[in-house]
Length: 110
Length: 112
Image: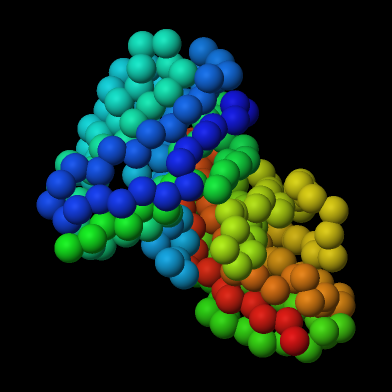
């Protein structure tokens, strides 16, 4: 699975969009980009995943660059409850193990 | 719907004592099962995963072992706990060849 790089921390004002970047320059053609988040002292929660096209669900949007070397997770209207560590992971979509990096600690502030 | 149960929520054990953490999944069959550990202030580390009964893959050498005696039951064990075994232990499941992992609520283990 390709290595991903994320900033260790970010701040966002409540009500504004939170844009979390992720670099995955060595990603292969059939590796998906996954995003999870972990609120303190809880298990991680799946957010979204994609391969090439941009994706949107009720939680967030995922924008993947055309060369697939980076992506951005967008929380359109961040709330205080979005404060968490966000993990970007590249993996083959064939089951098996999911390897977490250090993630980005997002702090949403009033 | 599917649910995952993990217990206990917190555990304090002396060094050298045994450990048994249990995880069960309901509402699905033949899931992939995982044990992760998170040391304080650090990322999640995959310890074990299983694709079927009796099939265990270990990711890192350590003082722990895992077993899968039934399809939807995953157990993490140790014969003698070390101080370094302290951490937040998470069980997770996914469907076979499916992308999403669903995590339990975790066990905070303190070895003193």
